[in-house]
Length: 423
Image (tube, rainbow, N blue to C red; front, side, top):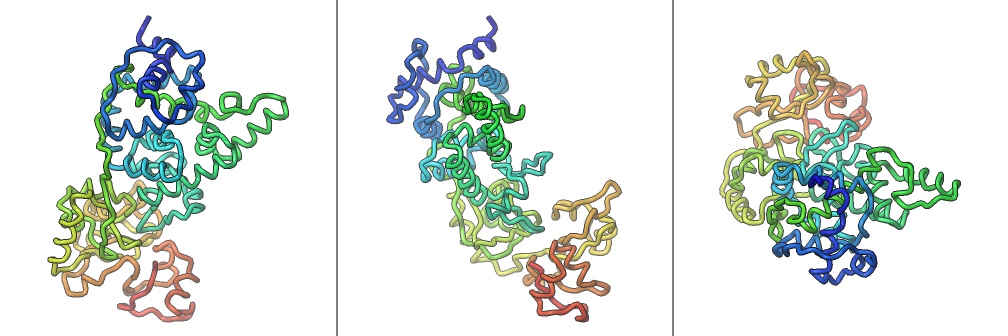
């Protein structure tokens, strides 16, 4: 029999054996396994964050052929698992801590594996974004800011808090973690309708009995497959890189705005790692709305010292109001910078011809003067030919909001050099 077929028919053997061996205080699974297969010899994993997660598992094994299929899928992709663990090592300790604070089963901490493979910049066809894959509307419901400068759906701390709040609400509604996970995937209305339909037919309303969309029917088995691999990686022939059971990052006081490259320089980090920890910033300026940035715990003091010793501008970019249909090459030429640099500094929406697909703020190099240090994404300096309507559209605001924030009326006259509050 092929090894993949073996995994399909024995999805819970390793889990049962390891649970018996660890004698975890959380014995919900062990106590209820009257028909458990004979225990097999599974090597005890080392004590690290994975073991902390194992001890917190609470859900019953899910008996479904889909679980075995997903176990085989993950087990046959060691390179994928290695990348997943490498990315997850930045975020998983924080997620586990937050899950435990709320008294949730640690299966919840595995959801970002299924949703985004721990890629905070993952973006789905439905425009779901971040580790927890919030769609725009649900993100707004749970207080995640989404504007030209920040998308908190990608913020590790804010999005984790929002996701756990949402999942707890779903559990309270359905009184089942399997149904809460299903509703997280397809929506509470979808699960509610499936439950109502089964009730009308006099059928059970547990997860496996419901008629759900195909993606949702695979969602919980996929999660449980990952759980089984974590419980007994040696049984499935996979290696899980060790993740230390200690915080990877901490929040550090920061200026309200600072160039992303400069912040990374102060923390003595590669820019890519700084962005991985602060992925919500859409542009080359990091806008620290809560007054902090996220850095590795060992880099916090280095950042503070370098910041204190810096006597130059913290921001070397300034926003201009990009107009719909404006060519990126023209913008770049006008401001003495290459189109490639503008693309790198901005999360721009361009059409196929390289033109702005909508009015939006565009960061360009600030003049090399003392005024450069006052450039801020919260304000816009009026240029010749600007109109209030164009500025409001460029910064994603209603005209009435711009007028109100600046004590102006529609008849107010704009003059070059005026500074308008836009955010």
